[in-house]
Image (tube, rainbow, N blue to C red; front, side, top):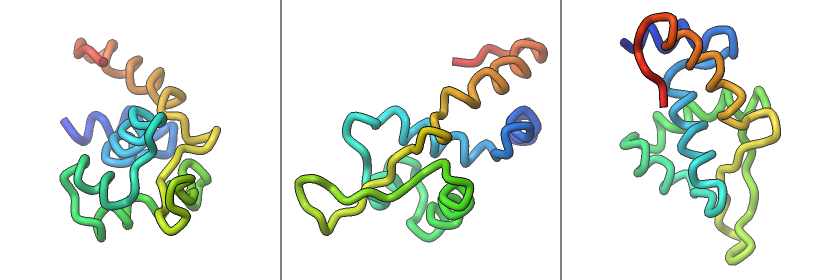
Length: 103
């Protein structure tokens, strides 16, 4: 199943795990997570999450912003390019053709 998602997302340059991370960040756009909060939500250790975030940051899909409440806290946010919704049509199209339903 993961290979099917990876194949569906390949045109967008993403892997399924990266898409899931972007989706979680997008879902929390009103209250952006710290790396620890995102790792907890994704059920990943911070090291693994960091390995997945680095290419997303390099490709300017995510960025780090200081918290307004506490400038020491860095929040993970989507950039304009990183909006997970831009990847959904690619995934939805493949899932539709395969007979599976996408959310």
